[in-house]
Image (cartoon, rainbow, N blue to C red; front, side, top):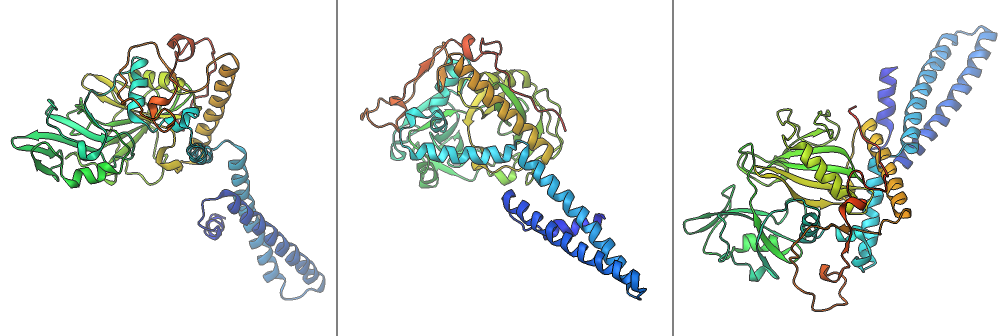
Amino acid sequence: MKNLRSRMVQRVPGISWRDRKLEFLETRLATVESERVKLTQQLSAAREQGGSDRAEASAQVQRLTEELQAAEQLARSERLRRRAPSFEALLSAYAAQHSAALRHGNRGLSPMAQIPYKLRNYSLAQSHGVRTPQISGVWGAASEVSLRDVTADRIVLKGDGGHSAKGVFPLERVSDGWRSLDGTIRFTGDVPPPTVLGPLGKARVPFFAEEFLESPSGWAIPEDVKLYCAYGEVLQVYVMRSSSDGNMERENFSSRFFDAHGEPFGEIRRGLRYDTGIEAPSQLPELVEAARHLSRAVGLPFIRVDMYATRTGPVLGELTSVPSGGKQSYMQGHDQQMGQAWVDAAAALERDLMLGRPFGTLFGDAEYTWMYPEARNKANMHHPDNWTRRTARCAEWCAADHHGVGQAGTVGAS
């Protein structure tokens, strides 16, 4: 039976669309059933005639019966995946929604379209009392970047857009200029070379130099703690660790997943390099609380809050609405638990909106710094300075005990 199931799995085309996969299985089921019925009739006729081919027909009927059972089991599993909320499917639809929001043009009307703007997210986090990296320089073009007035000895140079560490350069001061932390780039003076400005220029302006965050564990780059959140609930905590030399290439990173209480999940996501030596951050409670708060503030059913556990406490890295471009595949049980939590979060957000929560992202009541230059063209809705910044008291809609009391589901260990 096990071998038959394996053969059935191998016959399923290697494609990602579950509709086509289920269609294949349903077709195979009908074919196997038809063959089984035909052979059963032949077996009955052989038994009546007492022919010598009874044993062969009986063996074929048994084989097809077992194959039919295997096909039915696969199809049943696939139907279940279709019925149960799937994080993978929801994230794929979310990515399509994000693309549609960008096509509509007016980003001031879409909280999702505003998420990729890093400096805007820093201001948002500050307004809710979440610490962000200190900014030591902001430039409107790559050609304007100069580190002459930067006083820190270690910085991270990056753009307002970009993702997956592309166009991100951790730099440290040396006697005659600067070098990258992994030693692959070195330049004299204060103007970065084309090897830096070229990739940097592919990100969205403005470009900025921010504080280099020190890891409490002494690692070259602080561990990246990615908290997957559904409107106030943390679904999973994904900890990424760079190579020991500070190299920013993602293929050199190692990973481990935890729940919101620091209990490790297994290898729940395919295609990653796992390291069981990675422990849950010591500051996990503070990281979780900050992520929960910000996930309510953004006004979306799902958001990934990327944080760093530093020597001075939790610091926001960035907010991400569509991780990995919307393509993440998890083990089935975990995928469905996160999918259900996402659906619960959407219902909780809808309820809060009906109770009076203002639509979209809500800035808090703490002081914050706005780092964008004033927009010259007030009709340019791609410029964050032209977006409305709605403000609300944190206790109203963002705190754990806010009066909307909508609560999403949680994901447990599986």
